[in-house]
Structures are given as structure tokens and as C-alpha cells.
Length: 259
Image: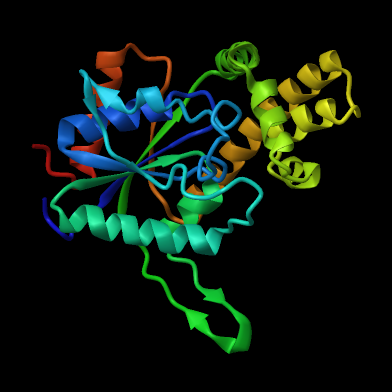
């Protein structure tokens, strides 16, 4: 791998299959995944954040991942810390001659890495970060299809024990307000568990909130495009092999040397 070669980024709204795509790219091109998800950094927040750690393997071989399960729930974790840890992971992966696959739906985190945000801290200390060139693959689908996936996935997570997961976090002593601040699943399930919502209302409101979140994600990605990022969009509903033919064609066009 050329040290000057851009990293690969896989982004898109929730429920478009980003992890599976990133895992296959990493497996076939000799890479490791750097997660760009604001809630998957927390341990024991698995079902609600959609970690799906079982997906990080391809043809029986595990695919290394970074910035998942790196902090305790309830601890404040911000974009500055994410950026610095992501840069360290990227440097480590590159130093070992592997490709970097940045994957996630947290637009702010992706932006902070690819654009190289500058942060102003106390005592006028300035931390200057360099942008990271990237070939960007975006996954999106028909709105009705995404809505259906979101609803089905929510039902599956509830059946997998998402309510028990949040209850266990509360039982650890994590204040409800901190879980609520994580939003979406952790917000609405916590509100149900502390008696502020009935179960049916919790499910309905959460389902609506995830749909709204998906729209906000797309708004962020369109903003990135207006700022000059070139996102190669791929239909998430395409058959697997057709989808990857397009992806690998796009990666080659964006300067990724295919092994």
C-alpha cells in the first residue's frame, strides 16, 4: 500500500448495511476498520448502538476494528477525543502496511477526520490536525425501503433484549440523564424504564425518531458534498455482487490501488 494513497470511507444513513460493506472491502483489500459511530465507543451499549460485532468477519476470518468499546458508559466522549484517537488508529494501521476503512454514520466524526478540524482549548492552546484524503463510498436507498428496514430492525433489537441492556446500565448506577443524552434507543428506553413513557408510546416515538435521524444524516452528507467532498453513492438495495462491482470501480477511479 502506498502511504500517500487515500483511505476508504464508507458512510450513509442508518440501516443501509455500511458495516457489511466495510467488512468485505477490508477483507478483500487487506484492511482494518476504524468505526465512526458516536455511541459504539461505549462498552456494554451493544444492541441499542447496533454494534453487531458478529459482522466483523468475512469467510470465517475476523476483521480487525478500532474505536469500538473504548470507553465506559456515562463518560463524556467528544469529537475532539474521537478525532485524536482515530488519527492514532489510522497511523497505526498504515504503519503496519494495511488499508484504512473508516466506517460509520456519525457525520460529525467523519468530518472531523477527513476535514481535519482545529480545536481551541483552554489557555489558548491550539491543536491543529491535518485533513485525511479519502475515497468516499456512500450507501443510500429508496426512502420506503429504508423506513421498512428501520422498523424491522427496531423490532429485532427489542426482541434481542435492548430494554434489558438499558436496564442493566441503569442498575450499574449510570444516571438516567446521561443515557438520555445519548439519544434514540437509549433516550426512549430510559424514559420508559423510569416511568415517563408507556411501552407502546416508547416504541412508536423511537421508531419516528430513528426515521428523523436518518433524514438528518443525509442532510449532513449533502452538506459535505456542498463543501467539496466527492461521495460516490451506491444503491444499498443492489444485489451484492453488482453493488461491489460498482464500489470497486469507484475506488479505482478515486485512486485506490486494487490488490
